[in-house]
Image 1 (cartoon, rainbow over the protein chains, first blue to last red):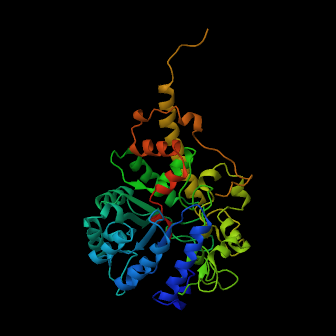
Image 2 (image 1 turned 135 degrees about the horizontal axis):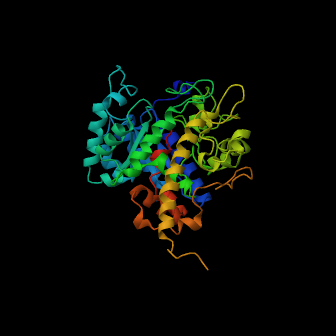
Image 3 (image 1 turned 90 degrees about the horizontal axis):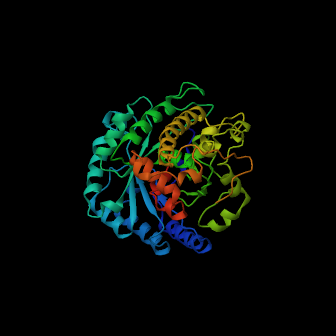
Length: 360
Length: 59
């Protein structure tokens, strides 16, 4: 959509920038008690090559102990044994982006010559699966929802890959530019697709984990979500570009170029992350996760829905002061899961209660 | 974690006291059994032990 900032970024991160990131992260680690996670994503992080990647991971692990997650989000095509050995050594897991079977994946994930990437991704997955440290290294799969696909086919395919879990993402989109597959704000193509998926998921006797559905179910049970886009937990997110530029949540830039930028040019080589985190502008960007529209604030499902992701609330007219463009989809799937839970759990609770007669 | 705004209305299907009454062994769905256990034992460690990192990437 509206993002062209990558055009000004260097292809590779320099040693100077890596050192500055490591120095910053060490200060963050010392300043806060909660662990944080570092995710390398791109573009394609494995394009760095083994030598540069080793330097990056070495530097990160020198300041971040193993209990802090470091993960790579990869297209999977460049996975090889040397890379896997390196990741195993530095306790860095790998998640692979894959949308489904070949016809689904290759509709959008293509190489430089327009060719489908499916076979190369599967070859990379096979190497990941067969590595001796696979149970740690293979973090899972990340898929974008194709609302016209068959949820059973997609779920069965992902189970066949040997993954432990998969996350499904809503597509980028907002009120000015509807996401692919949605015909109107009121339509529920994604909600209907997720409804079929959750029915399959709840019946499966040997399931993999599906993050987005787990979040909805956990929230409906009174628990918490683990990711922005559902629930009302706030997640602190900051992005560092290859030139060291510090930005807000990069998903925002799908709305318009520069939506993820701070008003001041911030860089890990000249600014301290811990000072950025204390800034009012960072607090405001953080607070953006909370919906502001009256419709959301008075919605009985807000605790579960959370107003979705900020990028999906955008319109040029009202900025982020809208419900999510996926509002109807979220309400649809939440309502369906609520009904399923009530049916299953009320039955269970009633059956587990003492079967005494009425009191005299 | 930042506390919820007073505007937020809590409306869950299964109040915590009811969750405690559920007999996990009688739940047919392994997904549901696991998630009930996760919520019952809710703690930072439960949430953070999850493979959440790879799921952070949203694009």
